[in-house]
Image 1 (cartoon, one colour):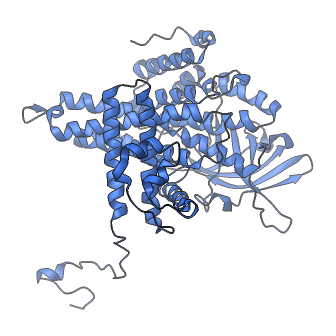
Image 2 (image 1 turned 180 degrees about the vertical axis):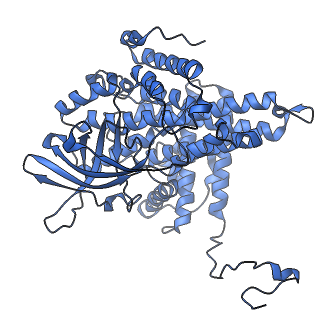
Image 3 (image 1 turned 180 degrees about the horizontal axis):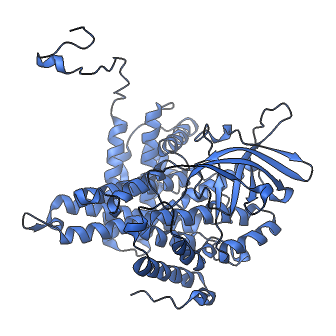
Amino acid sequence: MRPEITGHDAVKEVGDADRLVEHFRATLAHTFGHRADLDVIGQERGLPPFVLRDVLEAEPMRAFLPTRFGGFGDSLAPSQEVMETAAYHSLALGLTMGISGGLFAQPIAKYADTEVARRILPRLVNGGSLGGLMITEPGHGTDVLSMRTAWQREDDHYRVVGTKHWAGLSGWADYWLVMARPGKKDGDLGNGIDLFVCEQNDPDQQIKLVEKYPSLGLYGIPYGRNHVDVRVPLSHRLQGDRGGLRLMMDLLHRSRSSFAGNAVGFIHRMVDEAVEHCTERVVSGRRLLDYDQVRARIARLQGQWVCASALSLWSSENAGLSTDLSREGQAASSIKTVASDYLQESAQSLLQLVGAKGYALDHIAGRAVVDSRPFQIFEGSNDVLYAQMGAKIADQVRRVGSSNLRELLSRDATTAAGADLAGTQLEIDVDEQPAQRRLVEIGAIASRVFTLSAVLDMGSRGFGGDHISVAVATLREDIETWTSRLRGSLTPDMSTDPILPGAWRHLTGAGTPPGRAS
């Protein structure tokens, strides 16, 4: 049993990160166990105010902030646990913690003017405020460096003008980080990028939500199209020592590394729901849990939970705020892609096990499928990230003179142990200039080998042996799937034949060939 909440002042007695996380767990257990029915509020747009109030009064943002700002977030371990705890109950809530903590609070703590940070961050911790990040534009998603939002200096302030959309917490956040490119006198835009702090309680800095989007999932988080025309003080421009692009990559790589936190909690919930349903459900006189195919699905779910846990451990030790992650794209992309792929697959497995009743808005299985799907898209589409990872490995072929995938992955400390265990599975030659789909396959393999190394490391520290065995089997199965694709031919390619209605029917002898008048 979790301890009952003894009052809103309880968090003031928290003396360390462990107690903060335990208090947060107890708060959510109480809120979602006694005050809120997730199957009901999961069908509504936005979290009920009392739920958000209860959550924020537990001061979860302390887990994201470094000690110099009164937090415990110098390493990612506390924030990973906060997101894990939240995502177990609600993936939308876990993402809300990640947005406000990882995409706003941490960049402010690391890169903002000290006085600005000292004024804003306490309001996130104990004032019930939220922050967000605006990057994506209607015409520029993945192609972020071509964004059209522009900034120019005007006397004692910066003016930032543009349109942003699909920013989580649109219309909710009290503070925003807005990304923009420098404007030129001729109306063109410079190649650099910068981030600006906007405060919604200041009319000159207010960003206007002009359209709410009817998002397919993640109902607890508002999304929309936002009109930006703000004037912010000179102190509100983030200052990265190595320029705006390095700042952005450090920010995004840390956020991608944090995906594992949400994955651990969410997949844990999928496992619990699957085991409970398959234990209670009887088909043809046998429990579902006694069927081999069902047990195989649950074993894979468990393996995915272990993999996410290993990635969370890796992030907590290697992606702290003091570390410059701007050049750590391979590791960050591995964590993001594997965690988000497993989020989606685990939800699909639960829905398959639950059957028809899971295909409803008031059942967690159906909601889980649509809630988890965007994680494979935002902060870099997985196909794009896999291709980028594959391209870096292909570049090694030219630099080191070896085309053997096993040898290439063995050269990197983060994939060496996994490559050694995978062994002959990786005995494949990599072309110097592979087709794009080959790059995707190579990147997917590399991400699983990275995860395998993280799992082996966690096992060496005493993590449950049965769990490690299941995770290793899960990853080797994945590696075999992707290497089989890589060994296969490049077919099919797109067909140039027209697609006509009823194109098959004339083959029965009862119809007229398509395209010919009857």
